Image (tube, rainbow, N blue to C red; front, side):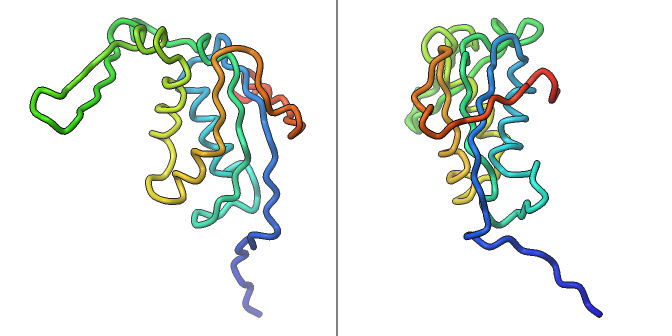
Length: 148
């Protein structure tokens, strides 16, 4: 008898909420875990073509750690498309200006590009401090240090 490949239906997918505390955690390890949760790779019902992932709330984003000398050496570039429109800033300056942007850009680099990846990125909520406005969703705290 032939066994058919399981494909999750949209009605069967349950999206949970997780809170990740970024304080003292290396940025890349935190973001790879967040991307994994957003895509749903931790679930047995994972499918590449459907958004089976969960919502992720990252708190204390300004306290995420960059190892080595990346704080001064890592450079973020932005190009406007016009001649002379290349702008750059170090990771340290970006952290002072917009600390949540470090996490958002790192997670986006780990998600699939296209409509599905953009939908998954919308489920990421990043906050610089320790407070978030999503208590009504009853998020579960996820132990990042144990998962790494």
